[in-house]
Each structure stands twice: as structure tokens, then as C-alpha cells.
Length: 114
Length: 113
Image (tube, each protein chain N blue to C red):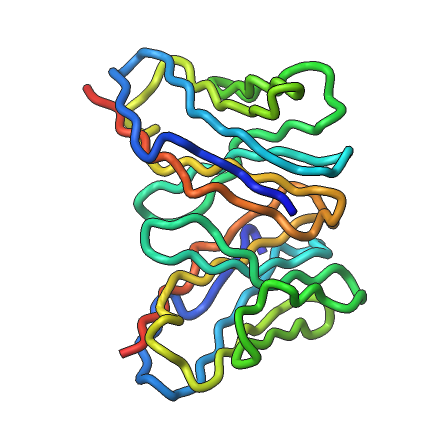
């Protein structure tokens, strides 16, 4: 069974500062993938970044980077230079060997303050 | 199409009625997924389809829920004899292949009165 844990129900960050959203996972699969999605108040899930379990380098996509620590089973999302439009709910998710089934965490609500 | 399309965007129904939710995936995507999201919660996997393979129905919460995918494209999620606990947002996603990045539709908000 897979499990995703996001321990921060809510986070606040000042505009232009960096913020780290935590995600830990549990799986017995050797091959897996980790995803982060953003869900603004409009409700649509927006893909942000992906990290494969065998990727040697941490994934980066613009202002988003994934701090992947395999031994600690953590995949934290780092958002640099926060913008007001970053205010949203953020979900960490993983897919294992049964790649069709993705497990999502409960999410972290990020609020960017002006 | 340009993105995953879901209809209706909102559905209000009475307890005991059947509802059908539709998902039109991105053209060319072979995998299609259904999730349920209750208010303020994460996503609960329901079912996924991959090409012509038998769907993985392991996430369906009861036999009142069923889904089909016709012609490898459009999918319909059917909920029979709806209950108030079925009220949620139902999200559909598609990916180019099994396990790839999933792209989501805007969801259908179902309210069972």
C-alpha cells in the first residue's frame, strides 16, 4: 500500500520569499513517481513537477523545485520568489508499480501575503 | 481537444436518483482516471482505464458506482441510487500513457439533496 503524508494543513509566506511544502511517502515499490499539483480556488488540478524514483537529480520547473531525499522518503516542494497567484492548495501524489493508481495527500493550503 | 472536458460542471440531484458524469479526455491519451474529492479533502482514486485493457475498478466505493469508456475515448461515471454521502467533486484525468503525468478536468460538483 502507498501512503502520502502532508503534515502542514496551512502555510503562510510573504510575497517574494521562498517556501517549502513538506511531503513524505511510504511505499514498498522500488520504482515509483512523485508529483505535485496545484489546485486554486477554481478547482482545477494543475500539474507542477514530477520526480522519478531513479532520477539522480532533483526536478526543477521554473520557480518550482523538488527536494527529493530518497532515504528519508521525502519529496518536498520548494517555491521560490512566491507570488500572490501561488495562493492555492497543493497536493503531493505518488504512483507506484501499479502506475494507474495514484495516491494523493490531504493537501497544504498556501497563502501568499502581500 | 485542448484539455480534459467534464460535464456537467454542476449537478444537483435528489437522493435515490441516478446520475451520469461525462469525461472527454485529451485527444490521443490512452489512460483515463476518475477521482472523488470531498470538501477540503485530498483525492480518492475511483477507477482507471488503460487502452483496451480491463479497467482497474478497485477504488469504486460500492456497487452503485460504475464507469465505462467507449471507443477508448469518452468515459461516463454512473452513480445509481445516489446518497447524500456521494456529494463531492468528481475529477477526471487523462495521461498519454499509463503512469504518465495526469492532466485534470475542472470536475463535476455533485450535490445530493
